[in-house]
Amino acid sequence: CEFPVEVGRHIAQRRTDHLSVLLQRLPAHQVFAERADQVLAVRQDPDYHSADPLAYLLVVLGALPYLARRRAPLAVLVAAAVPVVALIELGYPSGVLGAGLFVAAYTVAAWRGRRQILAGAGTVLAALLTITLMHSSYRQVSELGVNIVLFTGAFLLGDAAKTRRRYVTTLEERTVLAEREAALAAREREQARQRAVSEERLRIAQELHDIVAHSMGVI
Image 1: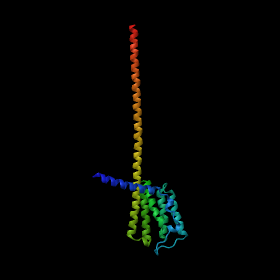
Image 2: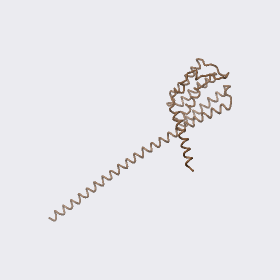
Image 3: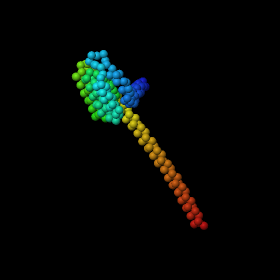
Image 4: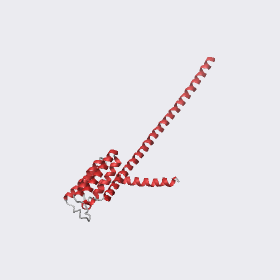
């Protein structure tokens, strides 16, 4: 039976659309609205130490690029990834700043082509490998695998949103074109009707002229 399948697809599509709209409309300042001490909340881990002015500076440098998230998503992803890697390498927790990279990855996939998506994926992979190789707390295959899965999901979701947006745009363009063609066809029918009326009037006038001329000739 196709009905349950179609209903399932519809529900899944609606969930994807709602999440895509939420991520697209999420202002950059909301991601970093928490205080810096919350962003740099120290884990109960000896590998991390308390925040200092350098950590706060890196947080600011990592947050500022998101102001241009829509205009230059790939550049934002690269610029935001560098402070996150630096925070972790220097022994600070990345906190919300690291989570913002998922939004940046989503934006690249949602608003740019395949080349920039691949470049963004390469940037993310390079950052993850750098952290994994140089920081002891991340030297676990499971940690790397989880991050790769999460970033892959962000890229796929962004690409799905872009595909959906293009599909809707195509439907709108087709609708506009169909309306224009319908309006043109209506005008052509109206012009044909007017020509038919004019020709009929001309024919009647010609017949009347012939009748009058014949009558005058008889007289």
